[in-house]
Amino acid sequence: AAVQLAVYRILQEALTNGLRHGDGEPVAVSLAWFPRSVRLAVSNPVGGSVRQPASEPGHGIIGMRERASLVGGSLDIDHSADRFTVRAEIPWEAR
Image (cartoon, rainbow, N blue to C red; front, side):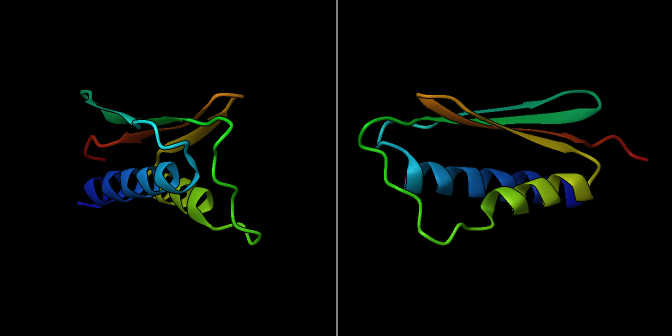
């Protein structure tokens, strides 16, 4: 249940970030279950019409990273000139 909640909340936050900071184009979501882990990627284009982040930075990326870490996973952010991508890998095999 903890893994499912972590995946759900990371996906929820990544989609919210895409809505808030993206350029209005579609957001790509990839979710794949493997024998020992689940991998999640959320990517949205950013461009000239990108909404500027609030003057006070939020805690979204920090929270996603903490959620992944609490269940033994990892979270990476890739912010290039034209795309913002969140990737998480969460182990789910019984310990």
